[in-house]
Amino acid sequence: MENLTNIKDYKKENEDFYNSMNQKLDYLLQQQKDILTEQEKQRIRTMTIEEVQTEMLRVMHEMKFNLDKINSLLGRGEE
Image (cartoon, rainbow, N blue to C red; front, side, top):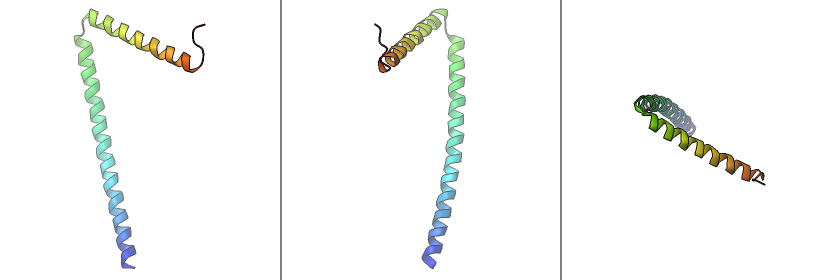
């Protein structure tokens, strides 16, 4: 019977530990998101018009590439 008690205690301690770790990880992830968001805001504020246009062009090319990839996967390539 003593072993069963030890196993139950171990399971409880293990569960408490993982709950604590999950809470800490959630907190860190939230902080990271805030930091990245602030970094993005600062980057956008300091961009010149040429940098904005270059970034827009890069995003357009990336979107076109993704759409072409999706079309080829769906078998709707250019005919």
